[in-house]
Length: 325
Ligand code: CP
Image (tube, rainbow, N blue to C red; front, top):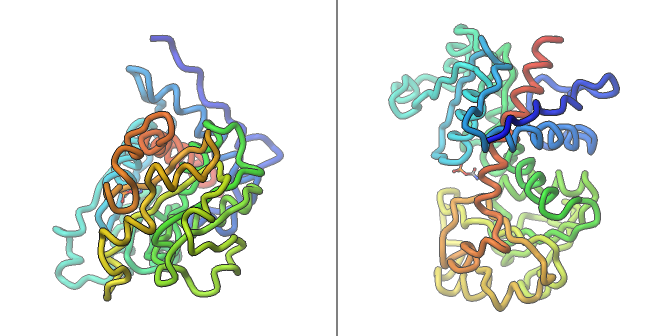
């Protein structure tokens, strides 16, 4: 296998510097910020396919992963991203931590801060919890998903997946379908896609639509076929049942019939349309199993691959911010 070239450090050009100490959301990022993060991530992809995947650019740095909700993709990819860049990575197990003895989030944050980490990634069920943490610590904080608010690295990896497959984001029509109401992935994607000049549609039953959805800068549809018509990108979302106190849908069968992505509904999108899903996918509920496995159209595993590269880029950019603060 050939040696991969070092990632292009476009972010370090004098005309741009990442303007924040943290990555708390897509909100507050410009088109240029997003583009530079994607450009840097692009440079890690080939290296991650080699036998030697390491660039020791975070040697001596410490990353703590603090997940108050379950995760496979985000936690694993932050761990891999940190390790491949040479950082020491600690995964705090909330289930076996002193949180279970009643320690508050603030006290947990201050305790971790006293150990001088350089980065903390946090996932938490409460919207705003990551902002709160960022005000209590000296290191960079990365939002790995807070309630129904934001999941910025998911939107960045989705954007990288789309850009690599379609060659651009601007001008594309992207339909986000399913449980928009509870989805931090939808919110971050809407912000990012709007910033990048895509045309965004959201498709959901009325019970799973956020209040005043038009204010998000999207076109709103309550019909899958109308919403998918001539789309370039279709993004399906899981029903976030862990956020639902009551039942928001009559039955799984009925939900799939009206709102699940299948071959027939997909035929309304453009012929070369691609399918994204942040995962975990619930086969036969938000998406038909065959479509999810259709490697010509389904980008689900590409998204996972891009997740590591995007998180490497974010860590590297924030490490530069730390050096200059
Ligand atoms: N997409 C995503 O956030 O997946 P995980 O919950 O597995 O991290």
